[in-house]
Image (tube, rainbow, N blue to C red):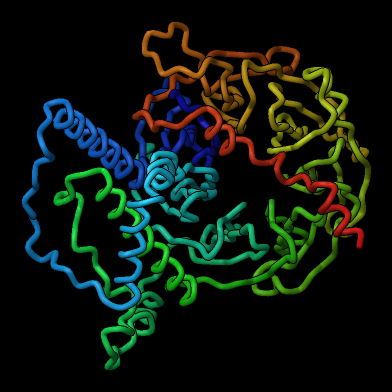
Length: 513
């Protein structure tokens, strides 16, 4: 199906736009008719496509053999080194897998095999350095943090990939662009260098590969097990499922061992919450850096910057529901999440200035809305005035507020859209004309037909008119990637996770206790 662009960023002060679409990252030049420049795709996507292609070929071959009444043809082994070496616990695992493929569990195994499919590693976070020389991306499913080098012309070169201990929920770059701060779902914030050095990895290698000690075959480690078969030697669906199950068991064991040992790359735990972290931004006061974090338990914490991040400066308390989005607007902090209002703070002192109604504006777009789930907050400045842009999950509009001198957020404009907004980015100088790029999930039927005319655009362009309001000014022509074979329900689960942060009545009762 046709995927929308789900997150955006701009490479430094240039006119080059980075947009993530599914498992890919595309770059466009807004000064050159929004022309496409380059793309990068997650390596796992190609592996999934190749696996599905092989499975389709195997199914077609099995069907032809059944129709002809011929027994399944034997395949000659292509790898002479694939000899049985199953020992100890691994042998028991193999027997369990074969047992699951036969007897009473056959039908159940077949149904599970057809229903299970690996979750696609969508790009859910994009952050660029101030000078636009590097781009940091996060793919949520595999918890991987990617760093790319930008050549200044829109082409991205992959420099590193680091699998974090837990799935990152928000990241930020320090003012010098040399350090990444990563907040995760477990409540921790890690600091790690933008460009990883090879020294820590080399030092960690001996520790991760201890000297083997004599042991009996029955106590052989799980890593010594290697399946006797491979995808070229199996000739039936049942054997293929058994092989896939063996590979899954091995992968899970290796993952567990890696978690126990911890990442080999350089990283440091600098602060933590007792709840799931949802947002992280950096602020500066009197030339000193601060780290502002928010969590699912309605807390906003202000901590000192590195190397004193363990020191808590204050809290911004007052939210009644989860906090999911933060942004710095001038010297103030704007926060939003599951409450009906946006909150405006003096973050250095923790003082709440006022609450700004948001649900009322949402109900003008979605009349039956009773709750709000803020997914994005961002600020921008034009002609000396500061504005705050708010996106609410599953609401086809963008809400723009102006920050006035008396610490008041005044509603300025509601941009009605053709679909639910997923992200927005302000570009101050694109051919000397400020632009606003909004990524939306277009309302369209769940179809992959190439004959669909008037295909809705996912990247919308807006420019200001003579009155200072944003008006639609065309769209960016997206790039069609390969079909990822994802259903609409699966896509919505990936694109709209914020509402799930809202606590149930049972959770609220436990918190009250």
